[in-house]
Length: 447
Ligand code: ADP
Image (cartoon, rainbow, N blue to C red; front, top):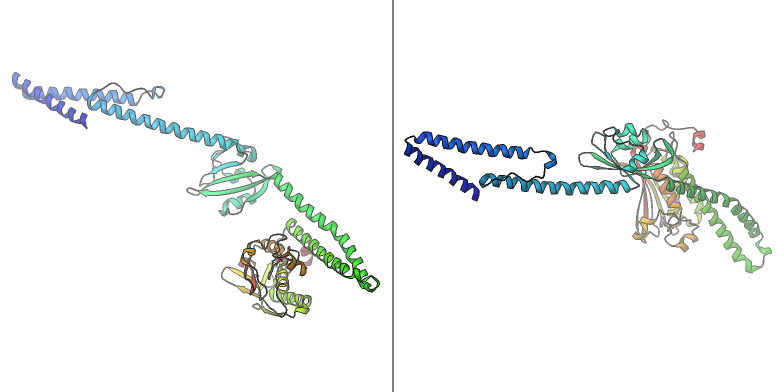
């Protein structure tokens, strides 16, 4: 501002001197015109210096501005200061980008940035190792052209990335990769890929181990149970002090048999997938079968059963598995309800789901146990469950079966008043025609 005023003063002084000189020589307008031209030429010269300095070679980009004074000096200094600030900000940003790139290159996880057209924008070194991407050749290539796998395309276009995708690495079937995508910005995606081959191997070893052990235990348990039954049939021949131990041994061998049976069931649910063609299950028929089997099992308790199901309501799924899931819930309801209880089994088709509900007026469950009920071997009270022959695997099996049918289990309970277990099946599982999707017995057995 100060320099601006001095410049104005300088111009006024120039014009005043020109006017006096012009008056003295008798050519006021000429002298003033010549002075203005000189002033104009001076400014033109400064503009040229300014232009030359601005367009200087990049090698001397940090060279100092030409020496000048007054308003022009101010302009040169101001621009030089701004340039220095910008250079500092740029080098700070560049150092951050370098650090981010160096650290992402050191990671074993692959990071891939994909633009809104689904083309590759940027990726780290691990992405080249895991996915075979080539720099810079693959830049701007469509990701679904580079990873040619139908499950990947389906996952990528689904835009529902709550779950991860596990599949073989492109061109390397021995490697298992886990893909996770996050949306950001304007429909851009960050894809994170992990090599989970080792984890996958351990997981299948675990499943095989559980399956094999359960299978191997089956025969010895059957033999032990057989002998115990024979001994108990001739209990009178035994000294009385052995009566109780023998009965307890039989009880525990039955528990062992139940555990092995449930473990085998879980292991087969984990290792075998559902076939595409499935059964059309008439819910009324299924409910009646479960009711009569459970009543038979708990004759002594004399519970009353209430079945509520719209006529001709059928679902598509594997009948033996749906029987097992619902029956597990109904048997639990009967087990954990005192004699003379009321058990209601109902089906209700709502706006978003088909709900199959098992409700009892039994002992109920304290709320803090509810989130853990479907964990394997989780039992609220060990002694209570062993009294009832429980294994702690029933609800884990229910959860697995429901997940295979894209369904979920919801549990509500009031301690001391009763419990309510709701299986929420998607409406896509409701059969449109009672026979339309039925499949042969042979196909069922293959699963
Ligand atoms: P278990 O074979 O022990 O019954 P589950 O996995 O079927 O194992 O159930 C886990 C635990 O949840 C049971 O031990 C029991 O304490 C509790 N539970 C399940 N169903 C009910 C119910 N209807 N009422 C009260 N408690 C229940």
